[in-house]
Length: 140
Length: 113
Image (cartoon, rainbow over all chains, first blue to last red; front, side, top):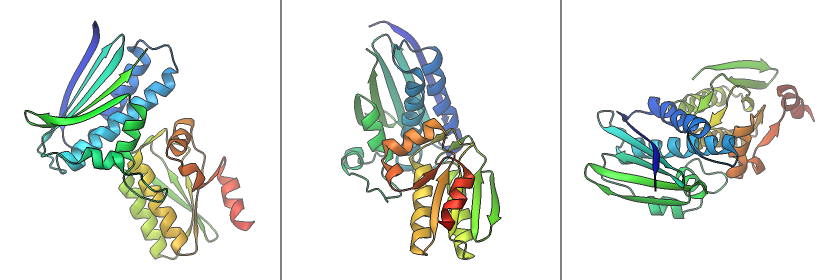
């Protein structure tokens, strides 16, 4: 599988950087991803899943510790997008969050469900410095 | 978060003057709504015309306002959703919960019907 572009960014674990992460995904969808479908929709979905994943890493993974870091790696090939969001925390129960269905009037609990719904594969596993949320979107 | 409030009788319109509503700024909207509820302003219109993107935290703030308004016999209504924001409401089925209007005037008039 030939890799076309890889973006690797490390930022302080602070919510003020969410727009930066989301916009990188959005811009990649418009400019760099080989995709024959609805590019505007892909840009919206990448903005959303990267924002939700980064929020989880900052708030649940790194427990809002601004001295910790967040690393986002986006790898694009002709066949798929591979997104990785690394935190430096002790992990959280992603599968519990993904499995519970938010009621219409719940104020929280929609982020992981949205990620699982919009991506083709999602995994959350231990990494050398903490945990990593990995998401795959097939492009063909 | 940049917010502008306008009073129309007993209805308050909150204009969200931000391109994004996410975990970084949506807490400010929640706090502004709580301040209004504490001052017995329980009929709100949230004008989202400037908002191009909303995530689950932004939706959570709106749901919080909706529940607080309803519990005080008021209403929280939305207007002027851009296409991506409307998609987000449809993805989460929250378009079935909120009253959503295409213009602020329509939302304000709905309180008199």
